Length: 548
Image 1 (tube, rainbow, N blue to C red):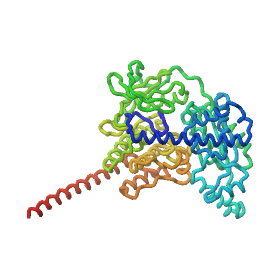
Image 2: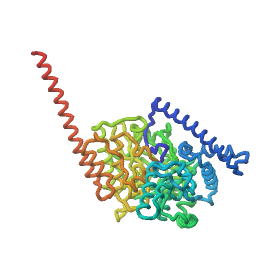
Image 3: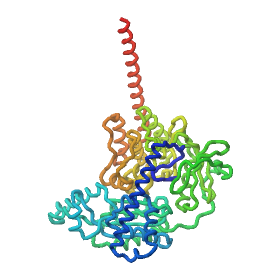
């Protein structure tokens, strides 16, 4: 079950931090706080100059500051301060979303994008629509210019149109935050034939969401019709986007009558908290004197979707037994105390090792890690289990540096047809067919493994200069993939390219991946042995030369 924090990290790991890292984080937080205050003051100044009636309220300033504080720091970093009215719109949408009957709240408008190479002055001279609420990534500006040029080539506009901003629709949603909300929203937009060109997703610290999409695929002059159709589609979707039903008193987990995995909550002894996410907390603890990891769902965040995901994780984990899969011990299934208990992985997550501790895997160690992952994934696939959220944060290390696959909150047992639909997982690691809501199978995990392998090779976050949603748009529409280092082992580079091929059937199975990795490991080991022998021989001969 996914429990994401600000770094997209989850799992059962030991907390490990160093003071230099902590100092850098503190300095960064101070800089972000100063920037947030600057943006707040600038937005407030512009709203006052605009003479809007809301600004006259004595409580407005505090309300605006609370708006910035309830959203993550990157909201202030990304928002277009020249469009102070947009901040006011976001504030109103979030306030409306607090009333259950209103959810989800949304706003639709036409915006115009400044293409690459277009000046701001030229933009304001020709623009009849406002710019998007948030600064666009370079790939969007380039896309706009490319599309405008295509219009000229197709004879759809005059020769000067390539220099004018191109209109698109911006759709902003606000509702209570919940698992797979982005999946539901992107699926909704896809159903209407809209192509997401840019996306910004924010979660507030009190359980609400603000999701902003720039889309194309709808006639510019028919904004009202788009608004009406969105309302109808939301109504048709029913409870997934609107409020759910009342929660049962007990989470039903299918059983075969043999397994005994229900744990008495009173027998769990909680130690220190080692991780915290939007929907739950992870503790180190003990159960019958055994060191365990205890993942506890926050009662105030539990809904029908969360219970379904929890039940799915327990159902799958109780069936798997493999040295490269985290061992399930038991679960508490009576709300409000819902928790999953697994073996404690003292080595932490691969994500934390790479991105927080700034660790690096040398090639032999990298291959051992990749082989461990492949063995675990091969076992899952042989048992018809698709993980669907394979990423470095869900790969944990024990005290012997054995890597195990963890976190089965979005995993599924493969259906009879062999293909599945519905988006899940985390965008940076997600296969294009999953992003696009197309039918998919176990090869979606292979794509994610390719991204993980690249991560092991480079110690970098995939598409680190893009937001997760921007990365997803690039993967689907532009065939975006991480850049393979030039000094990568040739066979490893070829394996990477094979894993993230666009067509799922062209990707290898994990049995083939495992065989390839073991072959590379053998070659690397032999080369290392040869180098050691050469070094030993040269030392022996140098001694002979000195003796003569």
